[in-house]
Length: 55
Image (cartoon, rainbow, N blue to C red; front, top):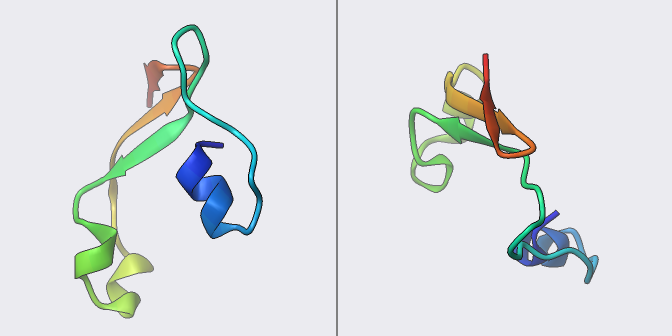
């Protein structure tokens, strides 16, 4: 988990550095700029596991 995600979960651990892995999902919209109800039907654009694009 990255530092800011950890911080938002009240956990102070994790970082993203050279030679480390990151799992993340990209969505079609900016989650902070849409209505809450839209989050339930929002589609993902891409997913990455260990830095590699997956289905």
